[in-house]
Length: 514
Image (cartoon, rainbow, N blue to C red):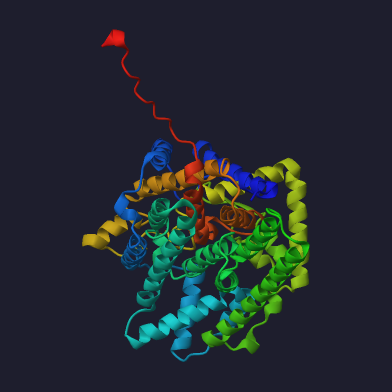
């Protein structure tokens, strides 16, 4: 099977990933924590060489290894999350406070309904938090003591799905390696202490892609329809929890269309597959709407007090993604959350928001021009993809001094490694950044040479999709977090095609030199 379009998309993904890695090494865009180039650069190339030359030991390739890494990784993530507990702010705190209020039998305030009307996408999070608060109340625990282990469970399921996605194409060795890298990047992150949508959506993102990839496999005859239906359901759940997984649905349809023309197929059969894609898209939208309605009911919210007509239209999010802000320390935020822009449309109708957004975009175009606009979005891409910590401690007041309570023993070690003011945090950040950039280089360089294959194309197009999402719309590197396991899986799928040092064989001695 062969497809020029498929190969072109693979090469586009490869060039894109290599470009952002090179920029991050040569001219990084500052994020909320500094990187020391003298540590990051050599560590990146050392890890890249390790990926090229190292081999996974035989015991790690056994069938039971996938469960050991998944369950063990989930347990490690849970412990780290519980040890890193702190009083976070922003949306995560707002939703948890609402959940506790509802669980106590108190009605939400008018300001709460105004918030939910403005951001109805947070209703599924409220439902999850409400369930967590209910379980916590039953066992006389704090909600975080229930919701943080839920993050750990999500890590465990994600690690299992990563193995399944990689092993079918590249084998068990690379699959276990991908699990371990995912565990380091995701399963030890400071974000584990925050009950939020990134972790809740993650297993459905990776699981949905893994199921769709298996359904697209040419030799998968039995159960293909069941696998595809399960993939649609998984991605719909991910989309209900967090908006960004919509790109997975688009990637799956695009990959299916490409796959229709990578081999000989009767026109009638092609028409049937296209019809199935249309039905799948309708089912995805229907499930998303249904799950959102179910979340509203499960959260215990009075739906009659929600006014979705005040929710910002898509164009406003595009305008927000075109904003540029400079922080007190000189760090430029490209297309991130902007309080002035939010305040500017307070109380406005959707039509007024569209007019405001259109004028804002026109002003930015007049100010930047074509070259300036290209430079802005290139910098935005480099800023989002050049942060291996994915904006940890960057939201609201999370990075303020004293956020983590004093600790001793193992908890103090975790605070030193994961706390924003921890003594070992700068080194931890540098090494994590190096690992992330090495993953991007392995994935990007491998994609430049890998032959066309449907499973690889699906993952690559999904990565291109989240890249496009964060370029066009409002976002920051945290928006990539749920997709980090897919990027790691992509590196595992194509690592054999990445360049590797050539080992010179020793020449035999000539007779005259013996």
